[in-house]
Length: 360
Ligand code: ADP
Ligand code: GN1
Ligand code: MG
Image (tube, rainbow, N blue to C red; front, side, top):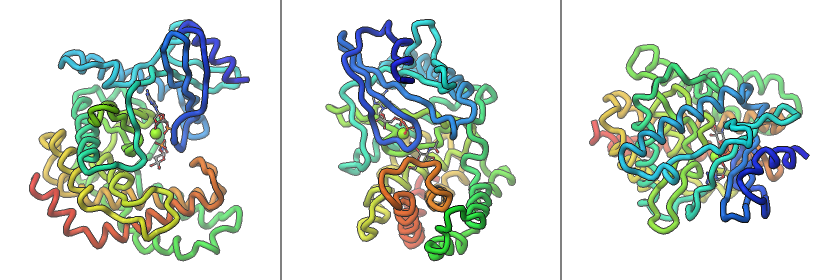
């Protein structure tokens, strides 16, 4: 019903041939629309239980995509492929609020692209490092005061830990007793939650405009050239820590296995992938990072993995309220891969430090 209502608002695009659910995101509902004039469109319903002020989120995206469009045009690029482009409703608005109060938006589907859950070569991961570094770089002079903080304390690991511990105490479904080992793993490493907050407090690092959700599947690659083309999923653009964009990308993309792999022997840090991403990221944004930011990059990978781990485990304990699941214990499986990765990163810390040190 809601979809039919929304499709009417975009009828000026053309005659709709078909629609289907699309992608592997954990948060929004995404549809691919095909029109008979050869246009393809990505339509998304924003998850309102997660994004409490979706209009503000849409304003962030409108401002950022307009800013990127100007920059890309100035340097002779093709903004229709290198950036997301919002499509207006028939009434000329960049989103539609349906009769249930849900917010929808449409983007041009960027054709001839691929999106990976796992890279096929180190070079592809170098490419994604470059793309995320370049993304930060393009936004370095964006007026940060214009951006709303769409999810408060999104990467405040200390706050995430407090929420996790409260959830363990509440334990609404009685699941905590079966995952004591996992809970202990994170408790033993509580010190990780403080590192970046201290660095911000001591003014060793500063906040800038960051993406905050730098998973590999939030980049579109050109199908033919295999070059990273466009950074997508702009919902969480906010003032943030540059290192966290690096760390979250490593957490997901430098994992030998998938984020939800059940066979933990397949999960671990691929140091060659770490190296490739670091080279791409630092080449694209190296000059804008200070010495401390570069030094902290390996630790950011650990902290982002830790943070995601407590979010997955916390959501499992809470009854799978936040991340979409498609099987029983899905969030628990995800938490376990993060634990395995953290242990592996701890053993590889010296190697990771050596990789980034040459850029200081
Ligand atoms: P979520 O927030 O749920 O992760 P995304 O915005 O990342 O949603 O979109 C989900 C998937 O849809 C992406 O991983 C990608 O495969 C695809 N996608 C999103 N926008 C586009 C686009 N403009 N062109 C092509 N594919 C897209
Ligand atoms: C969610 O939207 P998606 O699937 O790209 C989540 C990220 C997590 C990620 C874990 C808004 O990202 O923070 O790191 O899942 N996004 C939000 O896979 O919470
Ligand atoms: Mg996504």
